[in-house]
Image (cartoon, rainbow, N blue to C red; front, side, top):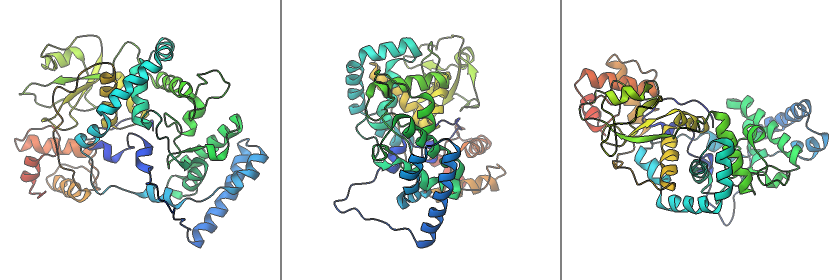
Amino acid sequence: MTHKSRFSVFVASMFVSSTLLSACAVSASPEPVVIVPPEPVQADFATCVINLQQKAKAAGISQHIIDTTVAHLKYVPRVIELDNQQPEFTTSFGDYFEKRVTTWRVDQGRKMMAKHQALLANLTKEYGVPGQYIVAFWGLETNFGSYKGSMPVLDSLATLGCDPRRSDYFTGELIQALKLKQQYNFADNKMVGSWAGAMGHTQFMPTNYRKYAVDGDGDGVADLWNSEADALTSAANFLQHLGWKADQRWGREVLIPQDYAFEYLGSKSVLPLTQWRALNIKQTNGQPIATADMQAALYLPAGHTGPAFLGYDNFNVIMRWNRSEFYAISVGHLADRINGSPELTRAVPKQPRLSREIVKQLQQKLNDAGFDVGKPDGIFGRNSALGLQGYQKQHGLIADGFPDVDTFKRLGITL
């Protein structure tokens, strides 16, 4: 969940979702159906479990845990289904944002700020992270702890660790989860979370749990499932280690001039605020932006018809928690709203979801036109955005790198 960003207009549908929980939540059924994997899969998994026992022993896991837990790990077919699941449609910024920055989350976030006022004040003093950001992460990850996931973490990680696609990564996470169990004597059935192994109020993967979890309530255990104090303190500690700058906000909504040439756009175009001011980028009240000694990048998640944002250094920190620009903007704006700021000045436009097939057609058209965006894969990433921007410039379109109706029409693609 902590990888560096890549610019993408439709990044939310391609990267990790705002929470791994949202990708793995399964609707309850009065009569759960048990899916039995085919015999070859069972045999392969059984062999893998033997290997996992050896790796656990080499990593210092006790023989007792190996015998009582590792030897009895179960294959979870639903985990593989979810891991292999690719969305048929991309998610627009409007769909993503409006589902996450809601009136309920703002109101509940303010209640949580009041409830944990003293703790959050201490965390701000110790870690340099204002409370509204900690609460905003909490809100997006698990709805303030109301749903922390229900999948068995150890079984899920073992299932993924025994799948060749990302075996090394998830085997490593399983070992870290077993070390957590050993350190705190967690019961197996207590260790529940997302299908990919994220746990607790703030959805930490086991490695991050081990590195950054803090005992915030002083009971001797860093319990991210049951202690809100532990979870909030751990989030602050994590953000500090990711590089949070105490003297900066995340970014801000801005206004761009009508004649903006879109020469500088996205995470690769980082400029000092003095240069953004010279480009006539303004605050939402129409006043020039400040000229503090800070760097920023301009983001247009819904194209030129939607809101514009300058992302500062802390925007990149949020992206290290979850490498989605949609997520980072949502966290930042939710934090602002929780802290009393108004809604966005420029409304998020309603935009159609694009099928992966349409995106593939777009990519192929750009390649055919001489703008190399790589193999058409239906994922509109940074290369696709840059190629599209080049095409738009060449054909006199608004060159915001956003696939709008006019661009599709010019490319001869029917939506």
